[in-house]
Image (tube, rainbow, N blue to C red; front, side, top):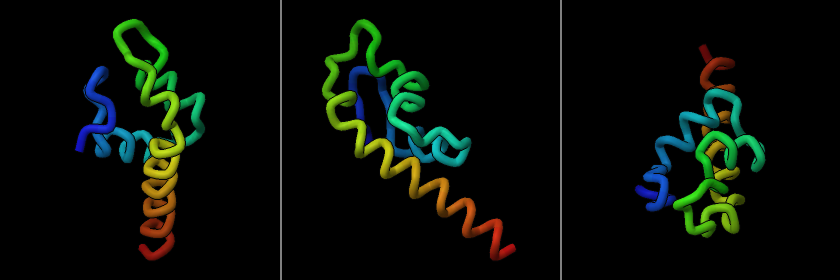
Amino acid sequence: MYLCLCQGITDSDVREAGRDGITRPCQLKAKFGLKQRGCCGRCSKHIDEFVQIAASAQEELALNSIQS
């Protein structure tokens, strides 16, 4: 599912970032260029969604490594 049409960011992209340890709002904004030209800024206003998705992916990764 697309989370940002301006930059073409999907929930899968955000999960992958979370698995790479990118979970803080400033990190996510930088990674996906949410403050660059051509972006409407709506994603930056709703960055909490990105953070939740990324953090859940990171937690899932941690749980899977503990179980292995």
